[in-house]
Amino acid sequence: MYFKSILVSEYINQFTTALRESLKTGTFVKISLGNYKGEEAALKQLLVRKVSIKREDKLAFTYRYKTRDVVKNYAIDEAIGLIEDYLKNGFKIATLFTTENDLILEELNNGKIVLRKGKASSTAAPSANHDKEKTRLIKPDSKSYLTELKITDAEGKVFKNAQDKFRQINHYIEILSSLIKELPEGVIKKVADMGSGKGYLTFALYDYLHSVLKLETEVVGVEYRQDMVDLCNSVAEKSAFAQLNFVQGTIEDYQAEDVNLLIALHACDTATDDAIFKGIKANAELIVVAPCCHKQIRREIEKSKVKNDVSFLTKYGIFLERQAEMVTDGIRALILEYFGYKTKVFEFISDAHTPKNVLVIGVKGKALSAERKAEVLEKIKASKEYFGIGYHHLERLLNL
Image 1 (cartoon, one colour):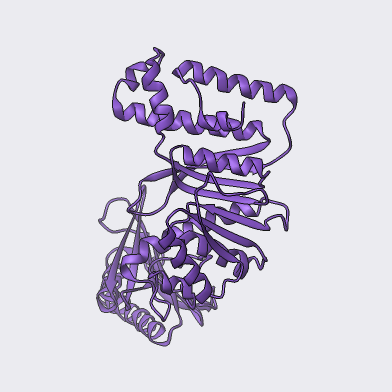
Image 2 (cartoon, rainbow, N blue to C red):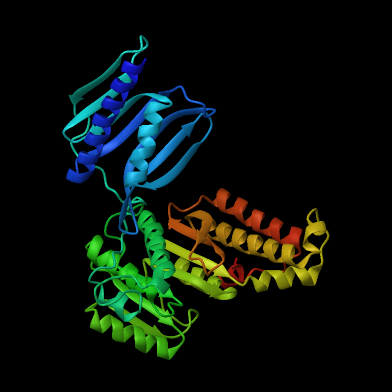
């Protein structure tokens, strides 16, 4: 037994020496420890990989139990010490994977200890990034508009206080990207962003359309505040975005007849209806709105005080508000469907400082049959009667 103990220690020393060398030379891939016979209940396996946390190399241990995984990060020396302990007191097999070879330390059923080399299972070392790098459609490097809008510094590094906004921009572009890919190629010739504000998302969309998709799409930001219009036009000029323009005005007044993609994020109350109306009348291929402040329908419900199966909920202000939101956007989706749009409604979380929003999306499809249109109108009528709604603003705009 004494001889065996010496032999085990020697093999473990060879194993950890090879581990240190692989870490030093950059050939380390991972370690797998299995066949656990120790005292820790339900532990089955231990996986070890290299990570970089705050520019410091560490080894991440993934402890695999019967019903859960636990991940812990250790400094290199501490981690190697733990691996030595586990090999002496628990795991009966360990494999060190490097780009040069696999090194296997195993205690066989007959008690014999073996250390053998095998052909490398992987010839490429994995990334050491702690978090998997996210492929972003909008990258911070060399984007002058991001610098002008105080998202990044001159070197393209995202400011700490702008991280949420940068994530919001990319999340928004990811959503639009998937929607645009559903459309026939070449149909997006003009985009209108209604209520564009400071233009963060408008600039990003222009960048994506021109830099990534290589389209010659005209993009217009419509904004009521003249100072925002002036700021955004100045940034567009500095960024050499020749087909991006911002105009002063309201959604209601903007002439959108030639728009193929219409966007309105956070247009308050019936301004969202104005935007959808403009998109429908323009026969836009894609309409994307994130409504807010559903006051018009809430006032209708409060005024009628109709009794229905949800009256026990809507007697509470917060539930009434949520009900008004769902009814408002539900009828908007039905109206879009009536005019031949395939509708989607899903939650959009814009950033840490903005509440969850609902995106209502209309993708232009085939015109509905007269029978189907009649069914949709009946649904709208029944919904209004159930909740005591005299009219829906979008319905009135479209003379339904």
